[in-house]
Length: 168
Image (cartoon, rainbow, N blue to C red):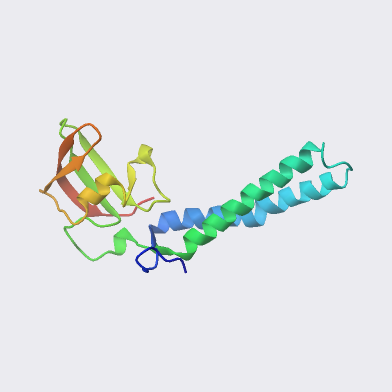
């Protein structure tokens, strides 16, 4: 088990959908992609001089990339703590897995979902629970205002709604 500086176990909070994505990627790499690349490398190795064999050199490089990603995924899944927003006890406060509707200082509304660091997707407004915005929202509730320190200024954001729903 990995330990942080405070001797507390590191935890990788993740939604059920995010956990499935990591597991599916690991399965794809271990069961499909890696065996195919190993087969190509073995075939290329049998073709003679390896120093000028592009298939062999590329294959070995790709194997290293795949193995590195497999190690990374295994470590992330080892410390994963799956948090299902739908199964959460009723609360008005913002925690991991919340879907939050905000009113920005500019007058624009924005809906963000607070997810794990492996699930960030700005196009879908999925933000990490350790991002500055999410950290300023944690433990607040609808009706509260938060002050977000940005590189340019300090922005006041009003929380309009907090709900816990399935995050895909």
